[in-house]
Image 1 (tube, rainbow, N blue to C red):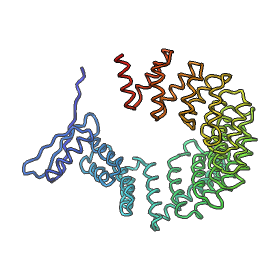
Image 2 (image 1 turned 45 degrees about the horizontal axis):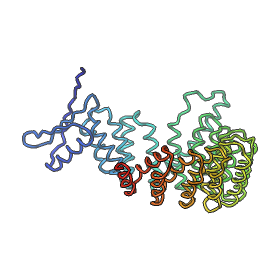
Image 3 (image 1 turned 30 degrees about the horizontal axis):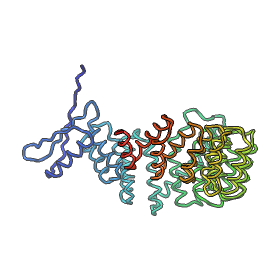
Image 4 (image 1 turned 180 degrees about the horizontal axis):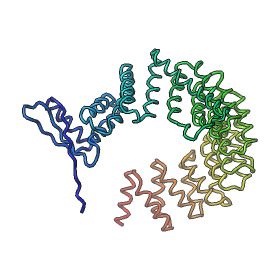
Length: 479
């Protein structure tokens, strides 16, 4: 049997009123720290004994501070993170506490607190240069960006310089390739990219006209190290609708050598209200072989409200030569764009295709097209014995979830000769929040000749919150 040892740390809190002391102890205990309290002679200081197990003595306070942070109590979190350095000066988590204090100060949204956060990050870099270096640099840039928007000229200079560096480093690497030095494997780092992206985002919010040329230069980079940066730059470009946005995204979608960068550009073409974007998406669906790119193009078309975009989705869904999964995506997006034309097309496509997976997706998409005659069509599928039973069951389920009235569903039970379909209908009744559906289940439980179907109805009555169901089941038990 192993013995568990506890290390005990003495935390001198300083002069404290009894109520405050009790609160401190309760807080530490709430954080999961076993604590004891002693008061030295004279009451000069409160000494808290924290049992911490085989761990860093600051762990309990870190948990408490992080809990305050997660609850949005940022000032309390600042106090707790700061107190770690005073109470545990030899802790291995001092650098982490400084970073978290800066983050909590930033989250308050107060200008003075954000300035204090920058000071804390500067101290962190000086005292613990390797602790959270990547995150600290990125956080510093985010804070500086916010302060720059509020008129801090020094921060504005820093943000602009960092953003420009993102483009200039590409030129330096290109020169290295021309001179034969190349790019070493260790030269690529995401640490710098995070800081530069934060700076670019801040600059974009401050002054889009100054940011867009820098983003354009980044997008033009072709060095291997710039791929991640270019992917992030595409998102930033998409978030600021300027006269250049459509041109840049179209250029990236056509010409970037990285597939993921192109996919991101195609995805964000969904937000560009420019007919040229629809032209580009049409070209991708016709000429591209990359399934990921086509998937993004289908989504982008679904976000355009033009009838032409709808027509391109319909045309793609019809093409038997296209990948089944992508045709299903086109059908799904058509279902999300309610129109009589889309409903008619999907019903026609259902009759043409022999692919049951595609038919399944068509049934779902039509269930989303309320008010276009699709409710009756779904019920016709349910009643058609020539249709595969699994598709009939899907149609029944979605009809029950959608526009079919309970009167339609109630009258359906007697017309179904198939036990599997009746079982599905019992389940559909159970999903309706309607007293009449409970009536129907009780009726089946009393009068259905098939014992298994009666058992199904009784099971679902047992799940009902309708008080009548409980009384009905009690009567069955008493019989």
